[in-house]
Length: 141
Image 1 (cartoon, helix red, strand yellow):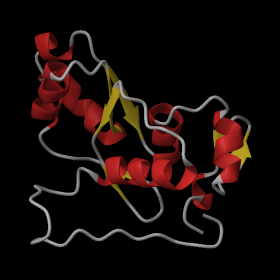
Image 2 (tube, one colour; image 1 turned 30 degrees about the vertical axis):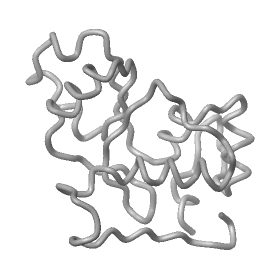
Image 3 (cartoon, one colour; image 1 turned 135 degrees about the vertical axis):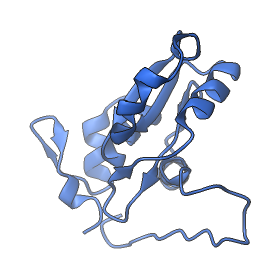
Image 4 (cartoon, one colour; image 1 turned 120 degrees about the vertical axis):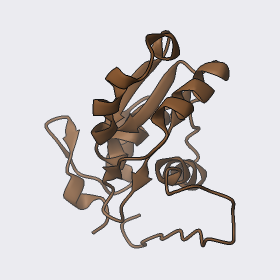
């Protein structure tokens, strides 16, 4: 990651989609494929991701949480800016689901990837660990 930038572009006609909400999912899957670190099977995620690694808000949070619940998922990663939408979602949809708001893709990796030593992994992929947290400016330098 230190010597290469990876840019994924999904044009309008390529894959049926409604918005960029699979960004963190694709970033996590690509990171998993490159590093050989598995993605946890009990986590779902939604969120747009910028080239600097910021996680941006999405639409349709209620429907996405409902789909996760129906699939038996217990942990769902969402953009932090969507946390304000949670009070509007019925408690029967949210019950039994741990919703984790995130602001940067490195936070997503720490939760979604099956990491035994997250700090060592973050350093391996070129992110600086400072006081147990990552330096977001190092995401896409």
